[in-house]
Image (cartoon, rainbow, N blue to C red; front, side):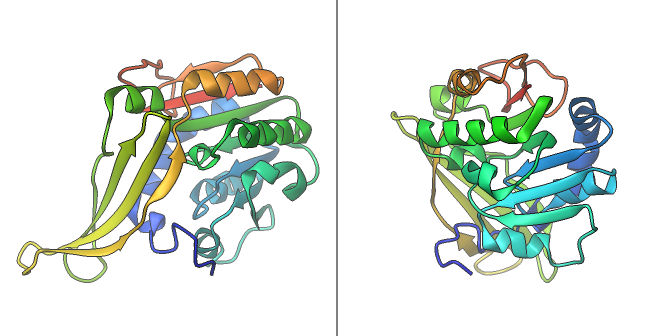
Length: 252
């Protein structure tokens, strides 16, 4: 395990209601990706989207740079139409040989790319790997809103602990004038009758780049991705700069 893996102590599998999330997102994913084919899952994390798409008949290659995330993604046997690769998503052209019918990059993955040159390397690699007309689905937080408003946190996520009490997933943010964001994912254990009632299980700072919509669209233009649609979440919801929780772009 890499000692600098910022997500080595954050169990996203436990802290996200995955069945409900994927059920909500599936109609949109189906419209964007179609009925099947080869799909890239960029920043595949603990593998829930990859496994789901594989169960629907897609051939999926998931790429993630976090050894701890990939360890969870592969902790049970994989179907023959799914594999995971460790590496930087900006190296997609090298990491995922062959051609693909679509690609997804969901969650807060893209902000780990710290500069425009790295983002352009990702876009160029996708241009080389995606077949003509293939869909690219990108999701980030709505950093237009985050940076403009100075938003400091995401909604709390509270889940029943496997042992005693509850687990609280706290995500603090500190936006900076240069467009970067200090992201602090923290896991707490809450025991209402305990003393003290809160225990910090894990916490870590991660430096992110808060990509605004215009910056993402300029990079897509430079890479030859056009025919874009923009939404406020993973669904057919209009994007409103000051209100939408996410910036979701579908480009081909």
